[in-house]
Image 1 (cartoon, rainbow, N blue to C red):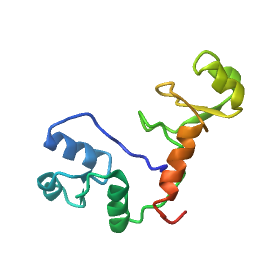
Image 2 (cartoon, rainbow, N blue to C red; image 1 turned 60 degrees about the vertical axis):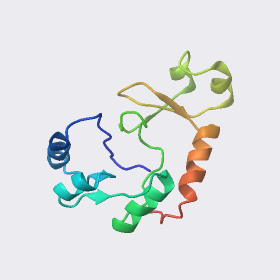
Image 3 (spheres, rainbow, N blue to C red; image 1 turned 90 degrees about the vertical axis):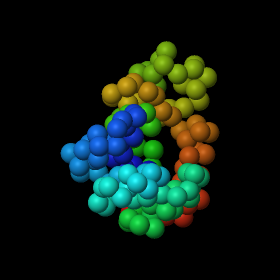
Length: 132
């Protein structure tokens, strides 16, 4: 959705709380006990992604900031690159059908506006969140 979001690997609750404090983040969790130990955290009830997003949006002014602008693996802002820059990194058929590509400067993952991108945008739009 375009937010700077951390999704840390498994860690002890106290370490997670310390990380959230150090990085000035909102802690979003399904763990009620953990949420109760960190002021300003959001306890989420649902197991369904879309419902979880709606729960967060009901509690904070969540908006579609810049959908699909960050790497889904490491959260870094992705950068536009040329088709030549992704030679050997994506299937040739993809490279021949698309002119726009983005690459994560941290992990190197390549993105393009294919069917998966379209489905993600459709899924986000179906939430009917206000645009910025």
